[in-house]
Image 1: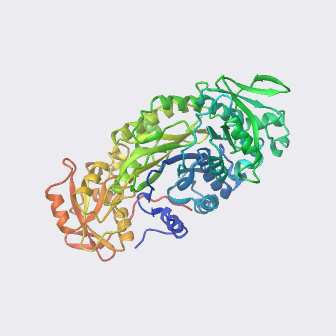
Image 2: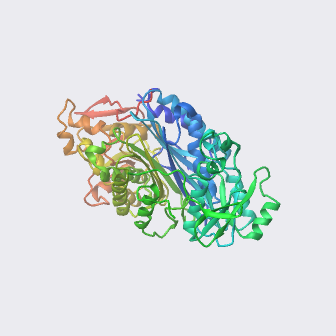
Image 3: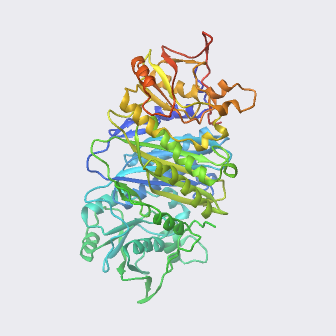
Length: 310
Length: 310
C-alpha cells in the first residue's frame, strides 16, 4: 500500500534512517516533523548555517558529490570551532537536480557523514527536494559552548598578539574542499589560554582579521614575513604573489585569534595541539589594518571573497 | 577603510543587524561566526529545516519575495506545531540571483520577520550568497518541547479518532503561501488532551495520515462526508473532484492528530481554540488506508506531493 517506490524522497529518507546510528542526546532523529535533542542544563546552544551552491561555492563536476557533502558540513564545523564550541548535531537540506538525484543524494550524505562522524556530530534531520536548478546544499549545525563561554569576534585588546593555525593561500587548489575544521585545536586553545577574540578564515586572512577589528573596535598589523604561506599559494602561477594569495584567497578555514602577549609566548613555546603549526602573525593596534614589511607599515585593504548583491 | 560598500553581503548583514531586536534568550545574534542561545534546563530542543526553491516550491514572479520569505519561515513553524512545540529562534540562508539580489534579500527578510515576529521567534543568523541560479531560501528553526513532551507521528492507537484543524484542498490558489501555522492551536490542544500522534499536512491529507499510520504501525479510515473541504478546492476547475483535492493537494498546513474517543468528544464539544474549526475526519484501524463513502470502504492511495529522485 505504500506510495514509496524507489524513486521517491521517502525511499531516500528510509535509506537515511537505516544508516543513522543512535546517539546519546538524540531523542528523535530523521523521519518525524522535527528532530529532538536533550540539552544539558546551563549549556549555551550555538547555532550556525551555511548554504553551498554549485558553480559558486564549488563545482560539482570537478569536486564530485562526496567532497561537496563533506565541505558543506566542514564549513559549519569550522564556524563552531571559531567560537571554541563543541559540535553536537546537524540538519541537512538539499535541492537536487532531477536527473540522477538519488545517487547524488546518497554520495552527498556519505560525504556529510564522513566529516560529521569524525567530530561526533549526529545528522538528525533534513529536507530533500528536487528541482530544475543546480545542486544546492544547506547545513544548519548546533553546538554547545564550552566554559568559560563562546569566543567572539569582539574582545581583542590593543597589544594582543594575533596567532594563527596552519597556513594560508591557494586553497582553491584543494584545501577549500579537503580541509579539516579546527574543532579540536579550538577546544585545546580555549582550555590552555584566555582567547580574547577568534574567527575562522573563510573570506580571506586580511578580511577576517578586519572582522575581528570591526567587532573589537580596534586595528591590526600583520607582519608580511610572519604570515605562514601555504605551499599551494606558490603554485597559483598568476599575477599575484604568494603573500597576496595568503592574505586574500580565503577558504583556508584556519583559526586566527587574539591573546595577551604572555599567553602568546606560552602557546608558541608549547603548542597545545602537536602537529598543527601555530604562528604569531601580527598584533592588535588602536586602529586601521596594516601590513608591515621590511620594517615599513602600509595600509592593507581588507579584501577577500564577497558576495556582491546588486 | 571598510570594504563594505553598499553592494556587498556585509552591507546587507549590517542592515539586518540594525533591524534585529534583542530577545531574552539570544546571547549572540547575527554577525559572529555562530549565534548563541541560552537553553533552559530539562527542555528538549526541537530542530527542523526546510528549503524552498523557485519554480518548485513557489514561483517568485507570481508570489513576490515577501510572501516567499513568509512561507519559508511558516513551513518550519508548522513543523514545530506538529510536535506541539514552541518555536524559539531561526537561522536563514539564501542563494540570491545576482541581479537585484539586495532588494530581494530585504523583501525576503521582511516576510520572514513578519511571521517570525507573530510567533515570538528570533532570527539569530544566516548565510547570504549570490549565484547564477534561481532563488533558494532555507530556514532552520529551533523550538522547545512542551510538557509532557513532543507529540510524534508514531503513537496512534487502534480505535483513536482522527481530528483535523481547518479545511483541505486547493491550497495552490493562495493558502500554500498565506497560511497561518497552527502553533497556538497545537499548544492549546496539547494542554487540553493527550495527543497520541500528530502531523502537519504538507504532502497531502491522505499521504500524511499514512505517515502517521506507518510510524504508528496501524491503519486509518477517512470518512468522505466528514473531510472538511476548503472553498478553494471547489474553485480548482479541473478533472478532479473537490474531495480529491482535499485528500491529495497538500500544503494545507493543518494539523491532523489521533486521540482517544473520549478526548475527541470533549475537544469537539469545547474546541480549545475558538475560531479554528476542529473536525473528526476518521479513525485509526488495524491496517491499510481506506476511504469510507456512503457506508462503503475502498482503499485510498496515500498520494500527495512527492519529490521524485531519478
